[in-house]
Picture 1 (spheres, rainbow, N blue to C red):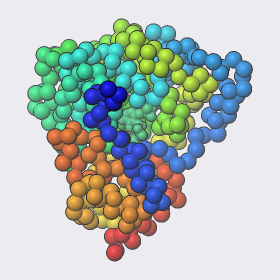
Picture 2: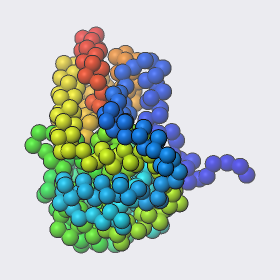
Picture 3: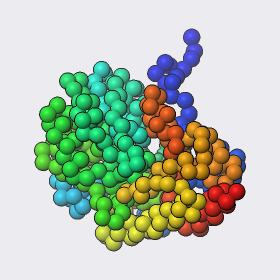
Length: 389
Ligand code: PMP
Ligand code: GLN
């Protein structure tokens, strides 16, 4: 019988593909998928071109990543977090964070193990867990400020818990977990001997007083944490799909064994450009934060002008908007309405919840502000028009 496998049959099409198609049909301003509409910095582009033309970088890269990029990942961890990463045995370069998370689950979790996921979650986690024949266990974040209930988190830990996927700064809510929250999670991980898969792709996107704390920096946590990050957000190069996983060699070995049979290695010339980019002076990182602080303000003023409610995000480039002051109906209905009536696309967050909890997404829409200032201004005008109508 020729047919798709039972493993993938329930997955459907990702919400990003679905909304992109709908946005295109209606020529909507697309604040859905988290991808910048502006280009990668020229100096970084120049590095890729140079690498492409160097004459020795267009064949397979070393499986675990080029020495220059692994070195740059280690230096970056030392510069920003005083973490001591072994560039040779403590870093794997992957095809984006997406592959990094999948390789981490395959390399560190056994069939039948439980993996804790805070809900809402980035949409690839659960299919990854299921493809590894493991069992997702969901712990809700509670609106409006998206905190977890310590008792609910504790109740999720048990003898079968093998890992927790912890995303901070958090997509889609914009939460940046505090030291107290991370310490609570860390204590449970010690008590139940649990591995952390830390998804920190928005590590440099924090605002105001908020700052990012890698859970690997907490006492005793380095040994039980693999940290996943990516160049997509930080260098406005989501199309390059260069990510990495770093941590203690004993765990990275598992990630490497999976990675070698998923992609073996990733795009070679681009790795050299990202090595250059990660080594950019701290001023690059500060300007990046300033850029997004002002884009966040533009989207907030667009939302304020139309009367939407939201909790100000401390991190990421997303805002979870409470649309109920303007619309009653499901998140998917609101998304269709916003695309058709206002010409603005968003993501209905149902895909970030387990099937049983998808109704919790109703009332919310995720809007991305990784867009040109002119687009964000135009969004403000369109939303205001919608609110007046
Ligand atoms: N984790 C989170 C929380 C994300 O938002 C994304 C998407 N940007 C990824 C992982 C995947 O990153 P990449 O594009 O590097 O695969
Ligand atoms: N991470 C991006 C987002 O959340 C897009 C990821 C994707 O397209 N798979 O919008």
